[in-house]
Image (cartoon, rainbow, N blue to C red; front, side, top):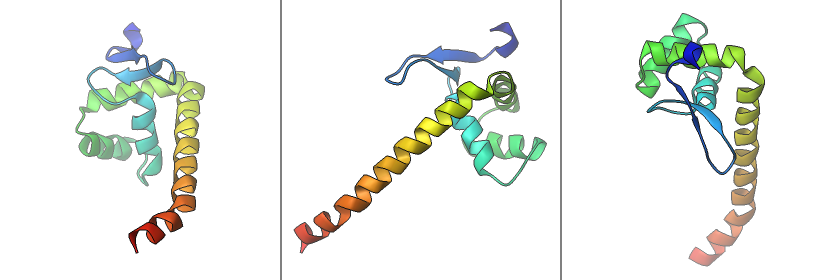
Length: 102
């Protein structure tokens, strides 16, 4: 892990995941970068500001992603699937909540 100094492994309900020490998971940071319009150095700068991180932290996470894209993309996909399922459940249940409040 010397190459990715500042990256730690965290355990959780979904297994181990790469994260910045004292910061977000790498997949969260990469998802943030991918969701923006900026690319390259501009994307790094925008992410630094948005997530209140250092340039070095963001660049380390980007390097980690470059080495392990399948791992990070899988985490992003799992999160997207979970969010889509939660939104669908909310939409299904929404009419029930309206009738209770009337």
